[in-house]
Image 1 (tube, helix red, strand yellow):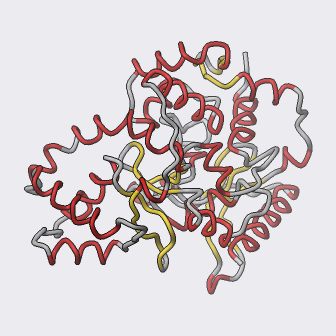
Image 2: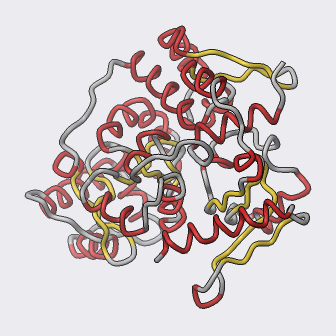
Length: 358
């Protein structure tokens, strides 16, 4: 039977927060498939922290070059994703997501003609390499008789992104501009439904494993039936382990890599400063493996759904952190005193963040 410590080491290796890091932010997006990015700055650091030394400017460069796009591929949550993978992901998730919004659309008095008119206006405005900010798009719709107040505008953007017309692409001021997906990311992988389910599970486990079937179903907002199809498609590419009587899936490649890689002292003492909403915590339905219930309120004050940046040691969440006042330094608040080795590791992690942020 595998211990919790062994499982968490495997996860850290999969996430590229221990062991080998990726070279570029785009490589991180390909490894994790989807990186939560409802908070743009936090999502950018989630990409940067998993690289060998990429800066915030490098993240923005990959966005501006179209090597990473941002959309709602699942759960109604914004994610950074590889452009070539977005369409097949939407092919699995869009139907369920749109159907689940029927009542809300009715409340907002959004009908098919509204979506068609909004789509036509966006297509006309962006065709030929155009790009537009959120505020400018709202003005465009309003000036053409489409009301955007009361979340109508948000739901119009969401619908057009879900149906594959637009995505968030190049940077614009402090956020991103909307572009036509077919123009901004013309290259796309085409997968049959069963093949797509298999790819979804494989890519999830490459960047998040070990994880349970329930974790995968929750992460994708998919179905247990889809997960069963994925396991059948992948066959020997997956293996399993058991912790506390629960079965976890992982790729055979990760299991082989970890078995031949002895844990070093630096890895044992490593401390990571991960951003708010990081996949290491939010990429699973079950989170008590990495976070004690007693500390949950410290991570999500007031239970309002706004997660704080987290300090991780030995795979467990041991505190929170924030950028120092005036942008100077990093302030760490641990739940319990760190060891001397962990203090030094936290200092190295803080210096890595300062280099990233410039």
